[in-house]
Image (cartoon, rainbow, N blue to C red; front, side):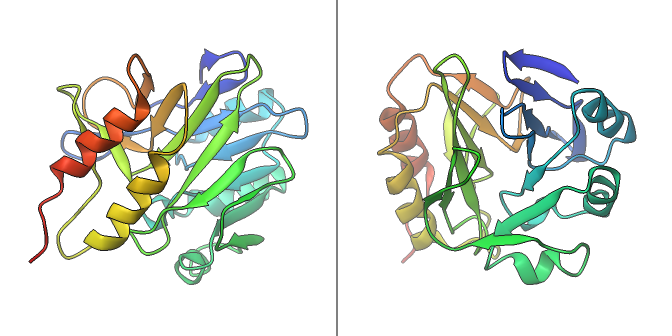
Length: 212
């Protein structure tokens, strides 16, 4: 694992499709480590053990569901969390310990924000970093492309256009310092913002083709 912030670690990349990469992120919270997204790499799961294991795992959407969820739960006794809308899909693979369907602050001190659109139960997470930096983990709801442009995670036949627009409008009201997507193109899914976040979201909204 690679340390990218004082309290945040990034797993080695995986490649679910040509030109597409993913990472998972381990936040070393004082109340217990939280894993965002998912990894199937056994070497990274063992690296997490050296960092104190995993107390909670949060998925941003159904595309992160894989047999490794069971491996992580069995290895660390961790609790798995996902939106209520995606939980039935997750339960086909692994027991789910917690669900949510509204914005709220978790016991560990970060916010869960349902952002349906990319999938019916997509979610984002706003995390307070140890150094005062605010991390926004966006799943596949909004992604920065290899060319530096932001785009919405809309897949025809898979995503709901109007729900995604509303979710992006919600995200535009946040003030993150670092944005971390699940899947990404290019070199990294981690972006330290150098311009207003609302402008980035506006760019992603403009990328959406209106539905007639």
